[in-house]
Amino acid sequence: MKSLIVYCSSHGTTEKVVGILSDYLAGEVVSVDLKKDNNIIDLKNYDAVIIGGSIHAGMIQRRIKKFIQTHHDELVDKELGLFLVCMREGDFAVEQFNNAYPQDLRKNSVALGLFGGEFLVSKMNFFERQVVKKVDGITTDQYKLDLEAIREFATRFNDLKMMV
Image (cartoon, rainbow, N blue to C red; front, side, top):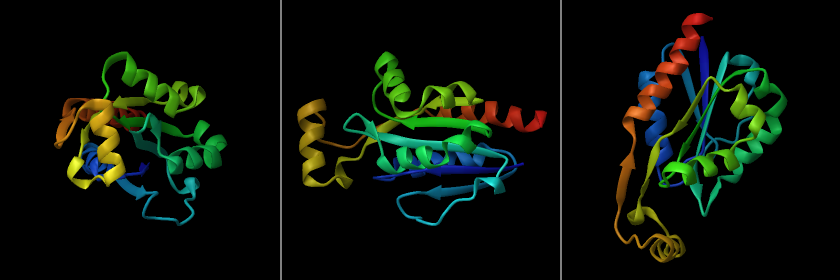
C-alpha cells in the first residue's frame, strides 16, 4: 500500500511530525510539503492519504485548505488520515481540529490526530513573536509534541493497511 502525506510546515514542527510519523508507518510513504512543492499531486497514485497542518492565528494554513478544496471529491473516496499540530489542548484543540477539516472528511477518516505542538519563537518573525507574546505570554521556545499520539495514529493507520 502506498501512502501520501500532504502537509504544510511554517517553522518546521509539522515537518518534524511527518518525519516521526513516516518512521512508524508501514509500506511506502511519500511526503509533500505544500509550502515547498508546487507540483500537481495525482492522488490516483496513492492508496491512502494523510493530511496535516498547524494552527497559526487560529487557522490551518491556506495551502492545506486549498488542497482539500481542490481534491475534496477524491479525498472522500480515499483511505484518509487527518492530523493537526497545535499548542492548544482539550476542547479548544478539538474545536480547532473541527474548524480545520470538513466534517465529511473527518467522518471518513480512519485516523485522526492531535499531536501537540511547539512555539519556536527563535524561528518567528517580529510580528509572529509579538502576537505569541501578547496572546499566550510566550517569549521563549516551547515544546509540547505528543509522541504517543503520533504512534497511536500510525498504529490505527497501519491496522487499516493490514485489512486491505
